[in-house]
Length: 210
Image: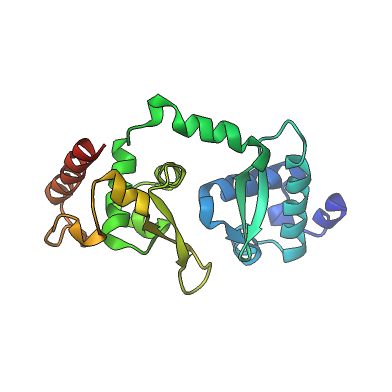
């Protein structure tokens, strides 16, 4: 069925099926936990919705094979890549290994931003850090330091992140109000010296609290 649908795609976008699936897979990976809606896919790829839907369905069938470790799920109208539930014990074991107990600089920076700007989306975190933050966010979720606290208004309904009770326990805080005061440290155009001081304070808190 997918082959027949692609016959109707305009000549300027005459990729083969494998190329299309590869592109969609890459887009879903880049979108992370915010996922992509069918409308977003059709806009980026410049194809019709039936074509985009068939690509997704074809990828889903491939991921259902036992030798694949990921799957495509639909959450709030957005498609995203996710690990399979049956692999949860191994993922939990990975997170709990001694080598993964500490927080990397990237995770620490991401956590600090979320703590002060919550609720906040991944895109907003990336705007402040200036780099992709999907992996640090996944690490923080796996450690129970941040969680999904809702959805942002507007197109895409991006996930909003906030800190957890475990976050307070991790840093030895009673409430979020006990975070150190940082004057204008989280303005969108804050300078690097302020950022270094900002993250240094969190490093000190982590050392004393863990």
